[in-house]
Image (cartoon, rainbow, N blue to C red; front, side, top):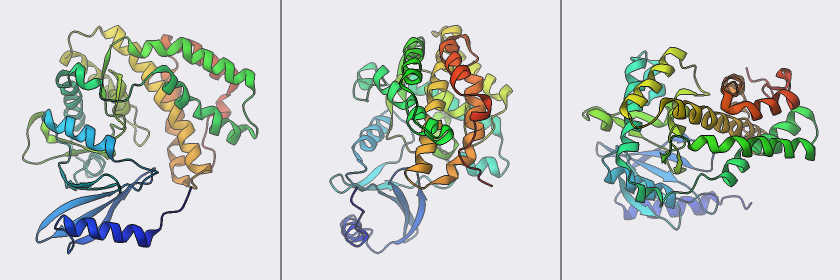
Length: 339
């Protein structure tokens, strides 16, 4: 992949900001992530905005724009688009502030109240996003699910075992998941924002109800299983969510969606969570081996703790059998130690 020419990139950014009326603004790094995207905060005459720098061809701002438009049109607190240059991967966004869940939890804010707000936002997603809008989102189908869980074999297996996964182990792995994945859909489909966790949620002063929950980093949204985002929130590899709180939020979600059968939801939740955490184990290894980003390894013990919990559900029996046969408990660990 051709390295980004930062001099040229900065020239494009400068021209974009000038045209948007923010050329004289102070600019400082707000955040980076596991992709090639980065975010800068701009300050100008007491106002702030956020620059998303998503350089093509590695990144594509189209999905972000599509989902932001969908969510904003339905009343959700996604950042408003202030200016855009799709071709060059540049967006100027409304600044939703710094009150992320991660920050607020660190400061000792009411954990239960935060999780109730996020759960209520997900209840409203299912209520408000129409079936027709789901057709505009990428399908979270079997082929994609298999590609994602196969990251475990592509990256984690050779990192732990020192050799590629044998064809027989791979065939058994795919067969186990093919038998299991239909269970993800027992509770139906909804818009799944995909990275719904404490780093991407904010509390917005002056807004009430579900609109008090600010939403970030939703460009990977899919037409996904109903429990997917709740599993992302409650099975968070970044922090330990008390089991009693997690159980209460599942109950709250079901109360807000009385048409869903609880048994169907819990089964779909287990499969969705296991699929997600299997992908994460492979992704974090890829970030280490391919992208030289070792810090994600500090989350691996939590990934394996959650995955072990997920596969104990009866809906995960075939996948559990595969793990028990091919990856011993001693092999379910970080690839390297991060202190």
